[in-house]
Amino acid sequence: MEPRSAAAVGKDFPYTARTTCYIEVHQDGSVTHGGGRAAYDRALASQSRLFAVWPGEWSSDLFMIDDLDEYAKAHGIKHDQERTGLTEHVHDVQWEKESYRNDNPRSPYVTIRVSLSCGCSIRSLGAFAAQMKEQRGWDVAKTGGWGSSSGPEGKTYSLRVLRRSLAN
Ligand SMILES: [Zn+2]
Image (tube, rainbow, N blue to C red):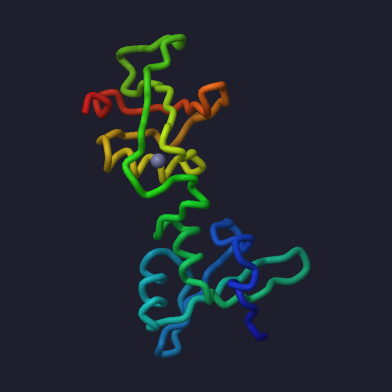
């Protein structure tokens, strides 16, 4: 079976779909399963080649991961402005505690409303959480509810942040 090109599929390639399985062919010819950071590093160093099986309804296609940059962006190994909506800069963040909710001071988490006046939008909570950890020391909850609403002043996001990390 001749592998197809993942690069040719572009951004629609299901890099992070649960059904996509990665196969790594090492220089010595051994084959291992699984992608991730280490596989990316080896493939980048030409120590191995990465393939992916994209299971279809009737048959599965074998793809060569020939666009490692796209692979890394999809997996969050490399920052991707388009996927995350976030520029790699210090965001201009306005935030306030969401007062209408019953804030239970004994809860370790507090819900805040965040807006970004730097032009960014939050498409990936994980990427935003990582940036806020770095820029403000916030521990943003990556599980559980988060949401956004659009108003006259732009988009507002509702996030849960570890209370004691907010004091920073
Ligand atoms: Zn920004």
